[in-house]
Image (tube, rainbow, N blue to C red; front, top):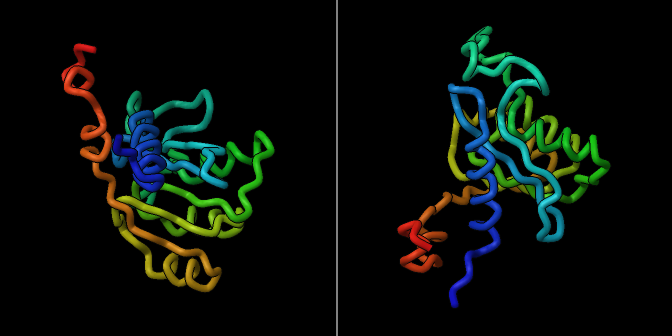
Length: 159
């Protein structure tokens, strides 16, 4: 039996989380992992109980949707809320983090970022990650890595 790699497994989790995104500009998911265990996940959307972009549109200032909390920040805040340490953890995210999320990732003590796609990779974010010693690795998500493990019945939905 073939097994999906850890990187593809955690990246798949991030892509599943992205399906919960409520901002129409970009759907992003993030998974924080420590010792091969998921400790938190997040997706981009509005504050708890707030108005969502999918309901009333994006609230854009200076070309940024300010209604949305980014997936990485939501995952980090989930760790803070429930007391899960992020020091030395890894982050799997569907898109390269923005500058503000990069700063939060560094301050949270996350030591490695795996991202599936480049997205407006800010030169200063890259420099900050280098200065902080945070490793980054592009791990493109391959949906076929999951599909090839499924039986024909599972693939067709008749199972």
